Length: 115
Length: 112
Image (cartoon, rainbow over all chains, first blue to last red; front, side, top):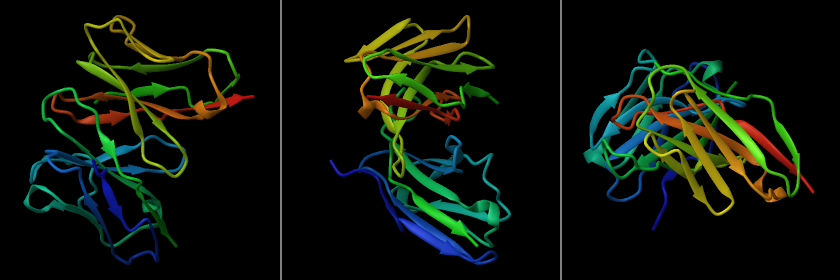
């Protein structure tokens, strides 16, 4: 079974530029997450989708971050404009069920450096 | 919202010993709690899930306990090996609809 795919693997941009990350979850997984992980910290949930609807985006900085999940499959996370403090690893994860106790499968992440 | 606390200091142990990691949460007890392993440069990998009505769960050399009175989960690795060196994260469902939130993680270093 293919895992969660993310691209790019690394990205370096200047502050105030924009950037987009792409995620392809495991086939059939209804729930998709985007997490931000700053070095030395645990993953922080930015947004949770169930199919193509947003379940929770309470910690998404909506003035600069946006995310969408096309047709309930692939997802993109965008930052515009980027700030220095956005330097982090952005992890995408997916899980099979909604409302049940199931594990999340993570991609390798995109390491973003804002200079 | 839940606050999940894990020991931020690294845990150093010798090979063959049992490693015990702690996860404490502050608010209501979740229906289940999960443990993940994260290696440098990789995404977290699921290890174990324990439900609120289960006191203990085992998988090979791993054991997890869940005490809803203490609001605490303990994660044990018996007969630890250098290959067990990694960061271990606990996670819980904050809403009952799989809003998975993570602790800060504890780094485990197993010396030969």
